Image (tube, rainbow, N blue to C red):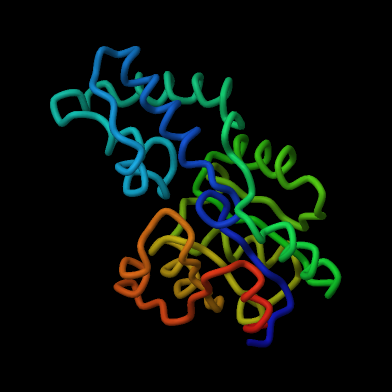
Length: 213
């Protein structure tokens, strides 16, 4: 691939945040007197923003309490978002090597923008990020608006960029925006889900990305 900038998804790609997300969601559900879910369930619940995650976590008969659930979850996550969240093994090495190559780095996440910026600042602050975008100003992936805005801020054509992610939403966003895509196998969704969305290029360890760019 001819790449002039690398765009990363955040949760499930750069950061293993599943336990903190699950803990905050389950704490919110318990506060509301509703049943919690096992950690494994959150691999399916996450990826499309907090509101969609809570919609998936709520029992059908409690969907009318979605706004309340989102409010409780945000409060819990704000207190405990980095109790267990850490960069995946190999991510620091990859970011060091990409930085050494002089490639601009960016984040495009479906996590709310305020939390996205907080996570990048506190857990990935060693590296310089040209653009960090979470859910808020632009529609969530797979809508291409965020990816197109990110490219505009970098002054690049999307054809010169690669999006690295772990969910079908990343695959479809890349396709919709004209970016290349590399799927990661260490994230929240199984490889088969990404393949069903049309993804063909995968890496099993972060530094393998260097072989494709």
